[in-house]
Length: 474
Image (cartoon, rainbow, N blue to C red; front, top):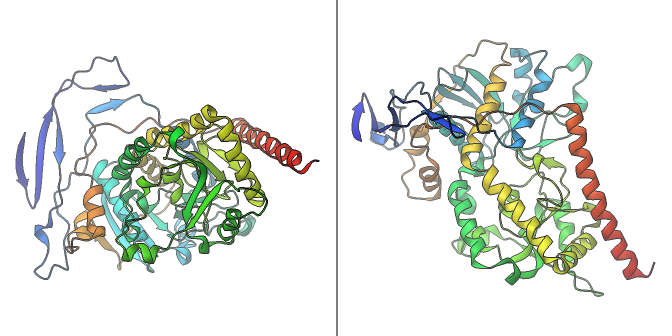
């Protein structure tokens, strides 16, 4: 192992010798490869600690030392569906610019460098950590992202609705965001919180997923409180406000424990009562949307508790391959109080089955939502999107070159923002190639998936209605 300096950048290089024996899912060449470690180089920060320039010697292209025949998780198959609307027409300059009024910022990737033109400030640091995530992707897979331009919306709800784009207005403009909807064309992309949510003291996903696994071990499932638990902000949407009424009943124990989260109060107390890894103490956890999809989904599904998932309108990039009664228990939005009560009763009378559903949901998250897969999903989405470009990729006059150093180095207050960045920094380009992108779903496969989901939901609906009919003497 040795350290050396190239130009303005510091690198640590480790030789890796691996044999190619073709006996596993991963193979390497016999020639020596190197792991290049690239820590943040904040030596280019100006005297006022306000301006940082990008190092000039980032690797422009590196081939991974380890090839792989490992298939990506099934949810990668939806990438093709998200992009197919532009398959025939491609993305022209005119088409792209239609999305500009909705966007918070434009990203231009050209020759491996990232340029940003911001149009408006996003809520909290959503835009900052979204850009940070894309920059880490460039560090992980240098030279593998094609030249492209994209527009990104950081709000909760989609903006490109299908009803607005027919005939004369076709094709719709491509707009990236965090969640999708069956009636929208927005391109689904991993949300900012995978790299941390400092305003709420939420760690980046690599660190938090480990903490959640440790938290799961503290209380065995059979020793957990036999109720359904939810803690969040009920004021962000009517459906959450309506959920709170399930807390009370003069006729029976509703079997739920619902708590309003006061984030301002938590902030003043140093977030001592809001650590997510300390909230895996109930047998059942409730997921319910906020204004749209909620970041809380991945944390709730990771608790080993059986997730009671109030049927969502919106979806993120990984939920689309999860199956009711295998990974979670479905809850009807309009009958949620009764459905929640029955789900808990059923689970407490079928503890082994309930425990299996909870465990399978968590295993799905820990196995299929490893950060390597998150980056692979981003990689394939941007590669597929880049192939659709029918325009000259151009850096706008008002755009600024951005790198990890320009975002992180000026932050020297020792606070949570810099901590999240330091924790989620990709130090080395990946020595392992991306997983193999599976083929897109065929129409018949989509129908089968939807049918399987509907059958599972109908079965639960039937059980629930029968339970309440018996209670009411019908």
